[in-house]
Image 1 (cartoon, rainbow, N blue to C red):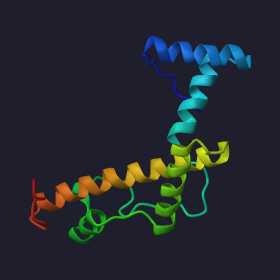
Image 2: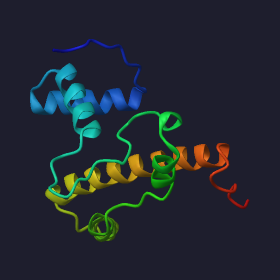
Image 3: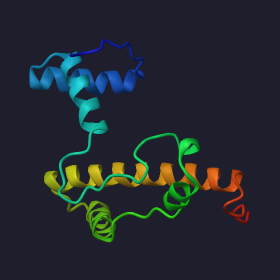
Length: 134
């Protein structure tokens, strides 16, 4: 099943996508759909763990679930691998497979950070935590 959407791109992004489509002999729509799919869905890693509380709104979670999310940290193995891959990227030594893994780990990190921030906000609102110092 597919859903059709309309997206406004900057001229530069459009030119890049169009160039890639022409170079690869593929349809521009397919290039854009594949690019979005790759950027939004994590690639398979054995160590991906689900977020506590699933993706329910933080405001609907019990106090203990909110506090667990507020203390959320990435798996230590994932964190070490993320640091290693970021160092390799900085050095210009990242392989394509490592680049894909880095994108996956960055997405996991971003999701954790967002949920943690939401939980911290909710914990302060409920009086479960003191506000962070400015």
